[in-house]
Image (cartoon, rainbow, N blue to C red; front, top):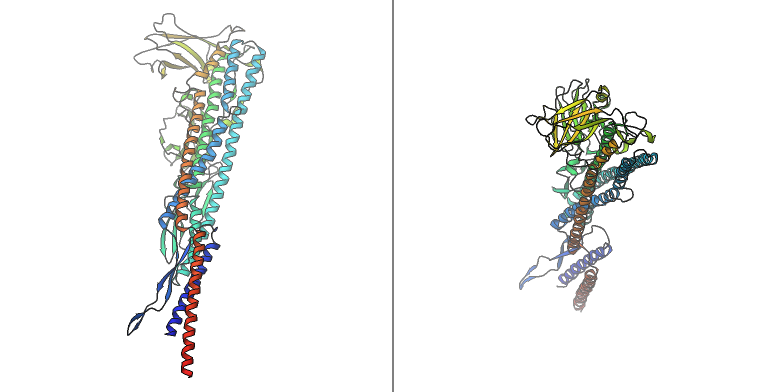
Length: 625
């Protein structure tokens, strides 16, 4: 009896001791990230059969249980991923919004001053002071383009740096998970789950979910296979795969992939901090393209119109701006490059897209990037020029199968635009060409402007009178192209004649050189002023300021949406953390109560042992008598 009592007391003492140790372990790790509270699970020992029935033999520890809910933890990881995705985007997009909409540094004030200076020039075309203002405001506008482009590139540099850092962090976490997999499997083989190692791995998975979407599959013996994005393997058992951030060629965006594999950036771009960075990078690139198109449209439109004028010296107007050249990046160094330039006559068709131009040894294909939408390539003209989407492309004769080129028409245009004039007398305010509707016209269409889109062809014009006549049955055959409702154009001898209104059958428009421009003639200055409200972009739907304002509005709307989404995800993340803490977190009040409870159990078990000893001593005393 005494030995049974002693065994019972000893088992209770041992169990209480282990419970006290576990409680102390919980208290010690109350501030440890990822720690899950542990509890001692107790069970009765198998009873001993006796003549009067089964007699209890005390208590055993069945397990030290980790308070963990896989569903809750998975939800926490998913919420963390989404929160980081929107938070990262919001932080960067807000900076872009503040930059573009800035009342002092933004482009809108510069555009307004630039256009106003031409209006004042039209009011006083002979004023040297006003001509000097035009030069100053034009130079100031170019400086604004340069400033905005540099600030966007600064953000691009920060994003690229953070992408590389994120990839390094992911690789470090993957290696740690693989090492823990090995340690856990080794410990698991001894028959019990290593709770603290499991917590460490779970915390690493939570850290990983900040960067990318994470999914896991159990691999036996406590091992865990880890997948990211849309199922790309990052950890397989004890092995981790290494991500790389690399540029396929100089000037190209960083691509993300595993060693020996292709780019998986698009598969990672919708979740986590890394996905947010990749999305922000696309936003920055598109913003640069939009800003660049604004620069190109100003350069082309004003050059075209200025060339149709005469300056104070009686000379033809030259280019006001240096037109940026479209960017062309080969997939492999040494490839013969296509020649790409902007089409001055097709400014309204110019997009803000990048393109991939590819050659398979037989055919060329053009696709938007990154969307991959096919763009039909028309036949080349006699000069080998292909005109598409506001571009003129001359394909390289020495191209080889597999050659690929990234075309970035407007990406660096805001950086490369320059103002060329330094003499106020060379501003061409008077027209070089006079265009009027014929007196016999029955319609009310008027010539809005005459601009020069092909200086070479215009220079070859012999100055003889040009008459263009509208054919309502076949306007195109007569050279009339409808740009929008009540807007027509005619291309003739390097000139673009823009006509407003609806011509009637047989209506004619007559062009003659301005043989005797007067010193106060302001008609070309008025035509340049008219560019401000002319819908010369998006197939005749948008003017220059409207296009830039749409960019600001789009970024502003996007910023607001991201702010709302980020705040909502922060609240969801807080709820997920609280839910996890409710199940797995350490409650100090509860642990303090457990200390008292287990201490009392320990003391009571000690009393059982003491009673057993007393009974044993009594028995020994009786035997000695």
